[in-house]
Image 1 (cartoon, rainbow, N blue to C red):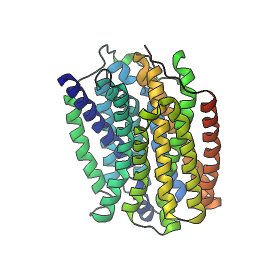
Image 2: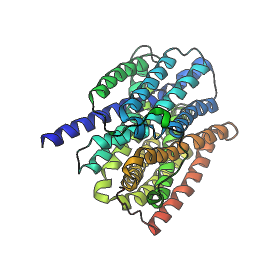
Image 3: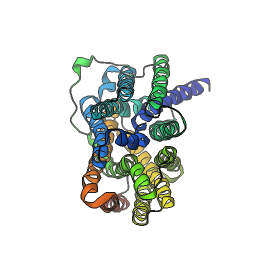
Image 4: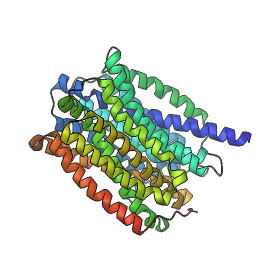
Amino acid sequence: MDGDRRGWTRCVLSGVVFAVCMAGTTLPTPLYSLYQDKFHFSELTVTVVYAVYAFGVIGMLLLAGNASDAVGRRPVLLWGLGFAALSAVCFLCTTGLGWLYAGRLLSGLSAGLFTGAATAYVMDLGPSGGAARATFVATAANLGGLGCGPLVAGVLAQYAPWPLYLPFVVHLGLIACSVAVLLWLPETVRERRPLSTLRPQRPGLPPQVRAVFGPAATASFVGFALFGVFTSVSPAFLAQSLDVHNHAVSGLVVALAFFASTAGQLAVGPIGVGRSLPLGCAVLLAGLALLAGALRWDLLILVVLSAVVGGIGQGLSFRGALTAVAAASPADRRAAVISTLFLVAYTGISLPVIGVGLLSGPMGLEGAGLVFIAVMAVLVSTAAVYLLRRPVLTTTGT
């Protein structure tokens, strides 16, 4: 019993470190309008600045997504916190657009190191027999941290001094605490190899994972694409179309999507992994429909409902996807396979967001958003039909 309690304490603490890192990646979300006023750049530039983060994640996943399987979880996570600290310093030093690009790129590198390694670390630290709960801790830490970022930054920007600086000072303090926690937690990789033995990984999957991975990755792509649009352009939509200029409100709307995702993950246990994936796709489709209504009729309540419903759908589908993929992965390839899943997910965050930014010039933000919704609705409907015809069956990797 004491061993289980110690295991869950370590599991939760590693989840807190995960959340701190991920919060830093969304801290700038409610601040983009302030940066636009200060440096006079367009909505397209906002989406490109946001997408630079996603490209950093993708690049790091390709270069070092499997690093923690070889050199250990803790060294990789410490490097990730180092990149997060450098990102915060860039934002503190921002005097032009170049600093924003650098800060977002470093934030992406940090998240790229953390996503696969921290997820595997949290699951490693959970007591034996607690894989499902440990998976929830990992995904809740990831998405809960992403939600806390805009909420904290929005509140500080609206009600505290130095709105473009204080959020990053606070984050630097949390990073320092996280380093101390990581140094206390044990390493979980027993057979480690030198860093020189690593090679950039090509996206690939062990044979036993492939049947599970396709539908799981499709659902993850659509869910993260919805999050990408919410994170990058919803503050601008709230300000331009709904005349909402309160940074705390903008941050809260974005945070609701991530918090709702965490709530959606809780439902996966009783629903089951096989059913949560198609159900998550259906709920995502409902969230997209609500977002279309918000864009069409300029109603704040529909924006809030789309954040909550879409977040629940993303949580259902993503936890189901992660559980299925992790269960099917061999133990020595788990972090690499999880990183490949995140590679697909972060492609969903980056490419559609840039598309919205490109279309927002000739079509306006509302028109670009409706095109995005139509494309995502086709994808998620196709995934749902496929999953209903061929349900995901999870198997345990060896």
